Length: 343
Ligand SMILES: Cc1ncc(COP(=O)(O)O)c(C=O)c1O
Image (cartoon, rainbow, N blue to C red; front, side, top):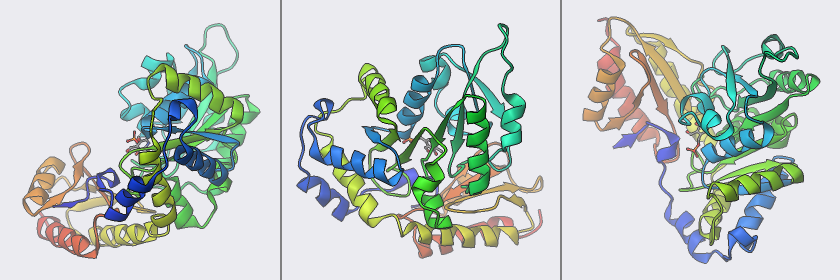
C-alpha cells in the first residue's frame, strides 16, 4: 500500500531502530535519562526556549500547555479547523475546563485584527480571554506556512491584551525547511511551543514541549499528574535525536512531491478546489458531479493507495518519508483515472 493518509504512518527505519539499541538510558521520571535530557536540551535550544519536557504525543503537549496557561472558565482563541478543537476529544474542556473561541481564518491562519475582535472586555459576565493558540503549519488548512509577520502580529495582539501564547508545532520543521526561517524565529512570540517527532520526522513516539523554566516546571507537574512521566524513555528519545540529525532536510522532498500532486489535481475537471500546498499536505474538494469523497477514497484503496476523506467532498493526501516518487506516480495515475474527465 502507498499510504498518503498521514505522515503519522511512517515506520522507523533500521538506522533509527539501531539508534534506540545504542541509547544510554535511566529513569526519566527522576530526570536520570541522559538521552531524554539531551533531546530536551536540543529542542529547547532549537526553539529558543529555556527548557523543555519530553511527552508521549503532540496531543499531550497541547493539553498540558493549555492547562498550565489557563484556569477553568477561561477562554482560548484558536482557528476553527485546528487540531485541539477537532481531534483532541474535547480535551481543553475535559482537562482544563476552558471554553474555546474559534476564529474563522484562511487556510488555518488568522490575523491580529481577528484576535483583537474576539478578546473579551473585562466583565463579570464574560469568560476571561486567556490564551491564543496557533498551528504551524496549519494541518487542515493544507499544511499552510503562516507568514512570519502575521504569526508575530497575532502574538503581539495577544500580549498587548495580557494573553498567553502557544504554538502547536506538530509540523513546525516543515515550515522551517520550506521558508528557511529558523525555528526559534517562528517561536519567538510564543511562550510555549512544541515539536512532534512522529510526523514527517519518522519517529514512532514522542513530542517535546518547550518554554520558560517556570512553564516547564508546571508542565512537568501536570505530566506527572496525568501519567505522562516515563522511565527508560531514552529508547524512544534516541530515535527522536536520530530524526533531528537525519530527517529534517529531506522534508523538502515531501514538499516537492506534494506540490506535484497538487499541480496535477488542479488540471482535473472533477476537482473544484485545491488548497495551496505549501508543505507536505494536499487538500482538495471534488465537484458535485464526482463521487463522494469516501467513495473516491475506497476506489483509491482498491488501487493500493490510502487517502483520507474529510466531509462529503474533501480529501486529504499527505507526503512523508515512506512515500516516494513512484508512489506519487501511482497516486497521480489513479486520481487521473477517477477525476480527470467530466462527470
Ligand atoms: C496539527 C496537529 N497538532 C497536534 C497533533 C497531535 O499529535 P499526536 O498525534 O502526536 O498526538 C497532530 C496530529 O496529527 C496535528 O496534526
